[in-house]
Length: 486
Image (cartoon, rainbow, N blue to C red):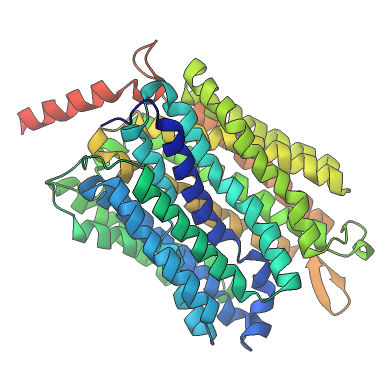
């Protein structure tokens, strides 16, 4: 089902607004992380679970929401995942203890599937000639939400009660859900009539939770501790068992036969490196901006000022999304992905040269986010052009999960580097200039690795077809052949 000619712009605008609302709730907590121990009179180890709970809930919810979107309808699932986003914000706003705050953030993590579901829905409601630009625009909302969220939350933290943040986030999500209900048409479920593979979902969730928990807490517990090693071992066993089950299930949670197709597999691998490459800069630049000038390399900015210096980079993603869409149409999503990750690597090189000034870091963030805009617009286009319509939401959710895994791994690796390479500042140790530069070099290396992986992604079989649909007929023909053979 396609949207009427007069409505595509409104539909894309509404889905983009919903993406901003979702990413806003995920990033606005950043300026509060350092204050949570004081707010809740708790240890830093306990309050760290406020962030970890969001990661774990999102890892479980995103692939499940994607599969349910294929089974029940994508618009319906977007409205469903909006509910925990709204409730989670309210719970956080009134949370009297750290435990209640963790519950609220976990609820908000359950709503992380809104963006990948919105991207998948575009395939059903936007005309083919506008699809690439629409995908790039909605993908860019991940950066726009951060651009708005960081300075907004910093301003609230500095001038008002922090609890207002979560009420505002919930209110914005309510408006987004209402707009989706009114503007976005309901489309048939691509996999209607199929069963939900509960055991497959449970196996994937067990593996993901074990792996992410080990990676995110490994530096705190010790990388050689029995708990960390045990969780990694459990993840390996769970993933192996899940893989065996999925290959035998008649209606699998994730169709591994589709997932191992070279276009899908290599795109997902590249997504891990892109997620790592993007997040490395987010760990470096805010700290350099806020560290005291007495360190010799810190720029002495307030939390609010640091957020404002970084805000233009997120807006750059939105401005470049139409350009990314046109490049996808003209040269294909693979070419666009390679261009994006090369720009990302160049951005880290700019960072090595410009780390000594606020303007240098502003230019760095602009270049890096320009690369992210191209890469984030291209990856969903590759995925949705390589899977049958009945798996669009699940495949896109799985790709989003791969990017999230990349950011989690990146946070762990860069966190270890910055924790090991320090200098004394009064009674505390802070990351050294060499540590930050090492992190930037790693970010560049990871981005170059992503470009190499992307170069090996097979191109569509036919020239002259829209990039997002070039191999759809081949995939559907294969599925029909498999059905006949069975």
